[in-house]
Structure formats: structure tokens, C-alpha cells
Image 1 (cartoon, one colour):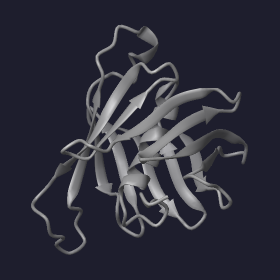
Image 2 (cartoon, one colour):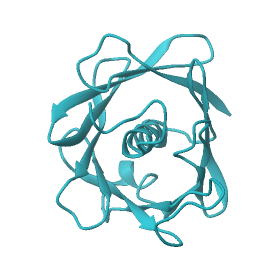
Image 3 (spheres, rainbow, N blue to C red):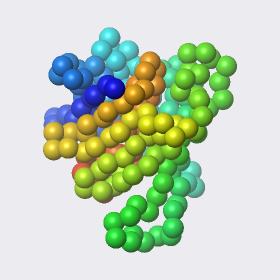
Length: 183
């Protein structure tokens, strides 16, 4: 299992994050853009854009699209209403699901696999959620004082995609202490 810590950069114009591994090395950075809606790039250690994330602002449902650096669609994350508009004893109002885009690209096949579900508390002060595919945990995300701890079993291109999904969830949920969509 791989362990990463996602921390927000203090002096940043947009929503910028650095992602460090167990050894403390920066393996990815997230470059937030100042635009209408939430937009960011996940950049690897070789300074190459791996995944781009963009909020669909004018959609009826809360939606977030992910694509490769050349614009090839990878997946869409949707926020689904669960059980009405009120919170009951801290339970979340929303559930998320990540739908893969249809693609013939073999490199994207691991991302564009079966549906990914988000389970747990995303908007709580002490956020704790899991990304699941076919009942298997791809990643377990916990908010800590030093940042978000991301423990994942994902490999290959799925790693930056899971990190992009984590950033999108933090940015979409106003109750999360690390994410606010007002940046």
C-alpha cells in the first residue's frame, strides 16, 4: 500500500497542493487555476501534466470532469443527493460516484474501468473517506493536521487520478477545512 500526504501550499494564488511520499519527497504537485469554477492540473515529478480536473459550473448537478493533458476525457465525478436537504446527526447530504469515460486507449483502460464510489464523510471537520471499485478499496483518505493522508492500493495512472479525485472532493465540499470553492 502506498502512502501519500497532500498538503496545501501556504503562499499560493490558486488552490495549490504538494503531494509527498513516505520518504518526504514531492512526487506530485497540484496547480490550481484562478478561473470561473474549480480547475487544476496534477503534475508529476518530471513537471508533466498527468491529469486535469475541471468543475462543470453550469450543469444541473454538481459535476467534475477529468481529462489527460491532451484533453482526452477520463472520467466524470457526480455529486448525488442522498436523503433530502438536511443533515441528521452529522450524516453527509451527498454521495459521489465516478463514471469512467468510454475510451479505446489501452493506457487509460485502468482508469476507465468500472464505476468508482466514494464512501464516508467528505465534508466533516475530520474527513475520512474511501474510493471503492467493485468493493475493493482504491484509496483511504483521512484529514490530518499536517494535511490529508492518502493510503492507496492503486497503481500506475490510477495514482494521479485518485489524487485528482481527492483534490476535487476537498474543493467541492465547503465543510472540509482544506477545501473551499471560493479560492
